[in-house]
Image (cartoon, helix red, strand yellow):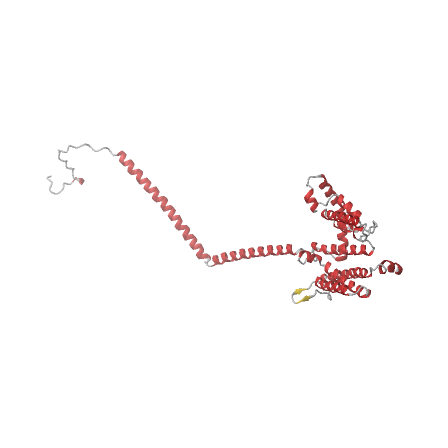
Length: 357
């Protein structure tokens, strides 16, 4: 084992890369253990704060990456030990930064939400790429084809091979196959497979090129449900086993819920205040006075209504009787204007005063 390590790592000059790889994985595991204990409210594990400010571990990661990167540039190549130490520091900082990759991507604390899985995906990609580099697999696989990019005779062939592989990698990534595109940079045969097969339903290539009624889109949906979904569930299970469950409510959804709850509380409070004001207004008048006033108002209204009906009925009956009397009265006889008007006999049978008997 030691001889293999010397032959594959030390003699090939990959010792700093090996130190980076080991420091990266150990720091990531310890960080996830620490944050899971903090989430479980273990007594001796707390978040780092400065007053009311929560200092995320991405801050320490940036500082360590800066220190390790500058040190690796400043250390001469002959000092392998110092170069290894700088690589270890850089690996520790990279693990802390990529562990909060989702926070940097969304500019929000989505560590334990569904979006926080992007951090674990970024860490897995970094581990896979670094592991392939340790195994001696170089990007675009020019060594497997016997191409030497430094040789003048092979330079045009290498450039053409490089351009074709990059184009296939971009096409594969546009089809939504992230892992195939990244690992295909080291194994070019995967790029050919990823570029030929149909795109994933939600990928940019599918939105641009596939109609929802087309056969290719239907085939992509069937493959997504039958092949990719089980693989994604398995990947999520491994991620949650290592990094913990990402099951918290997203901050924006939590904010919307808080605003909706606040609006409902304000409406409920206004309704209670209106009811209290109406109740106070009713209590301002005593029950007896309220009943008396209601009875008096009802009596006055009844009298007014009856008076109007009675007056209207009496007047109508009086008009009807006067009209009937006028119709039944005989017409008066015509008189000559030259005759003196006859005197009417006195009423009561007694003669008037000054009248001969």
